[in-house]
Image (cartoon, rainbow, N blue to C red; front, side, top):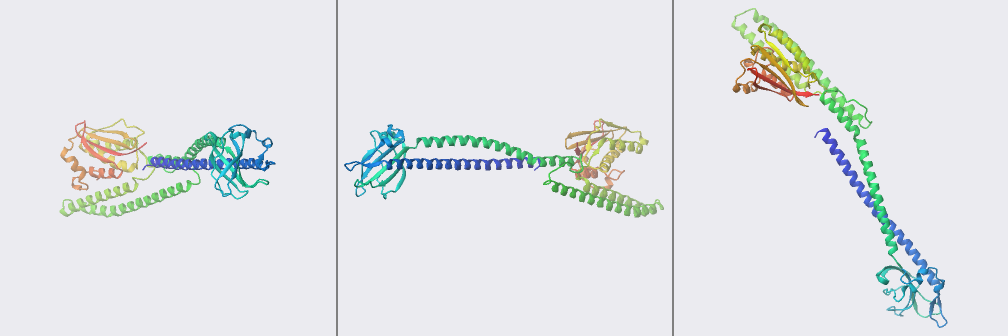
Length: 460
């Protein structure tokens, strides 16, 4: 997964987690607040209903004939005199065994109807709150109390009922307002979450861009200012780069020491063989020394490329390297009067690797082309995409047959068939190019000879 894809996935996960958490929190808050408001409304409703019941209880008297009466003029709420107003009272006589009741008095607001309630077994003075269906099918909240009236025989049940419609409407209105408020709050929180995620991931996006510059070769270190939470990661990354560079320097030093240690004995053997020209042993020694030199050169070059080809920040312009190599080739093949042509080399075209490695691979291809060419060698360079470039080296020589092209690149180290010169044949150049995730392909040149195309990683 690329860094951009990882950041996108992280952003999506954070937003999804935030939105799910936000939705759960808001829904829970909405349910809790609505339930709290409903409970508070009902507590206030019941308290008002009980006060109304207490007021009617206080106005309960006994007439001269021993019958209970209530002075309705002393009641403060005018709804008790308005038919079907939603507020009602009723007084029932309970049967001695508690099995039935008889309606005795009721409020004018009940008109020609009565409250129909089941018979409850209540102790004297005990209060009971419940719901029932009232006139015209309305839902009523009822507060009732069993009592005994001085001067009136028997037990009585006094009821005060009120319509719940107004309370239900208030709860519903509160729920709608709360829902709209929570939706608006949710949108603001979503916007805040988006802003927070964007701001929170901004340092990672900046670090991603800085890493891309290191990868592309435009920088060797992660540059910029980062928060304290991210800086330790950057410091660790720089420490890794420093250790890698130190390892590379040690590898180069060891390779140089090895080359120096081998060149002196090989030079001594070459001089010794040269003192006896024509001798079979001298000829054999000379051939083996040349083979040993080619082996050493190839293995040292391969070890160096393997150690350096993935180092960040590597950037080598193509045009200067090619210009220098063409000057060298003109001198090396001066006796053959070959014309060296470089066509439309973009100055901005850069190889994502070291100049020494590019010189080694490209120099070998140019030397091979110079040895095979009759009159002209042509070099072209182009960018295939943001990550890859191709350098074509063409000549007007005899070329290589189609059946032999694949074999030349697959044989590896076959020194008896390698092109003489630098000691690195086409197969070795292809091997080194593959270490850079590139390759060499052979084809027919428009000049009539061979065209060797070297594909290498590009850096913008």
